[in-house]
Image (cartoon, rainbow, N blue to C red; front, side):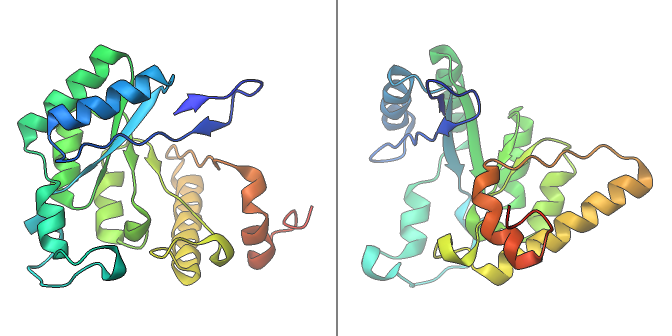
Length: 203
């Protein structure tokens, strides 16, 4: 992400991509992100057999290729992940990654990632969220209202996740355990605040 002029809070997401998802291809994306002034590059950590069952399902109109084969092709080994992380450090950008299984989260934690980005499709995967929370590192989740939801994040999932967040906040108050909850963009929360009935939602 890169800070935009005139603001210290707005950020621009930059995605690094490699045609074959290998370290060399990923390096091209990191180079482009660094040249653009990015401070952070976010990848995805896939371990196909740990995050899904074998299937012939295809991702609809996106591709006729089997979803299993697509995810499998995008996998990096543990050593390759470390190579990409080291290359990011060499270029002066922070390495971040989204895990899609507890095993992937364990790998990233062992690599010393500073935080975890949660995929929109995993926002109601509470066993995974609870597992990652035990590491005690920041978790970045994308909460959206139904009006601006991605195809993977629907409104009832946002509501369910919000209830979990409220439970965590109440637990932190009761036990005095530290908990930080920082909205990425307060203005974008208006519709959600209106829906949930927060007093400040319409202001």
